[in-house]
Image (tube, rainbow, N blue to C red; front, side, top):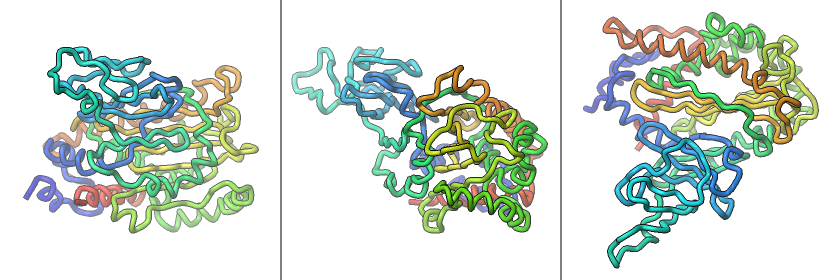
Length: 412
């Protein structure tokens, strides 16, 4: 019996995971192979690499991926591993290069991954067989996704299908990056993800976020549909029904998507909902006022918020005037990183149409608060006194996350 099977037997539904799930190195290694490396991971927005030769490096766990725009204007992803003796090639987080030159023995590669120069090699050495190893990459509406599987990944078109309509409406392909911030977090990635699966903590921990939204939204929809008692959820949905109907009349996608039973069996976990921010607020800003020009296909401000989740490692929140990409990265068993990327209309001009501080305020301060919460949680979980606690009625999505996690860990 391996460590995972042994520890799973000690898990009790309705409680948090046993301590070993957050501390056992062998489990972490298995999680990366069974879950993280098999997901389509949202990693950035295509406007980060506008010109041929522009690149950035995405790093998570032990992997480092070069995402680069080629001379043919195509975007590709390569493992940041020299095919000579394995050295990292790109040591900077981002930049622009005509050639990717390994700093060890100066093997050089084109932006299309071809080996261009390798000194003093045997006569039978074939450069065409020693190009960079490609990583699976897809781009949809400007959002860059990679898949770290060494085999054929799940079909991307099938994966993105339920979320295409809302992404098309917000038109992320005609947006640009307005700001970016990273939040290193000294905690196991599951504690990071669990925190984002519930809003039980939002009232006491996130005063700014809670002040922007109506109280009943925070309770029933802050972590998505089905995370609060059914009675309270039904009352809230009935309350906003006229607003939802108005959105439908305007052609704005507003039907909630919950992962299908078949999708869950395949290890998928996609989600979408659209609700009003509430309190008469038109955007997720400190004062609830618009922060930029309209984004996507909106003709006016309706004060709506779209929550779009691709899987627990990546999601987007969209108001009428900006979007926030959330990227959750596991780096080591007790080291994670949360990266936020804010998007605005591609025609918006900074300091004229928007100010970065205005659009970043709510989620920057909320994520800083989350970092503190999660790190404190991790410290407590490491105590020899820790035992799994009972989850509240407002944390049902944590159990849902555990079910998804266990399904993925046991898939072939």
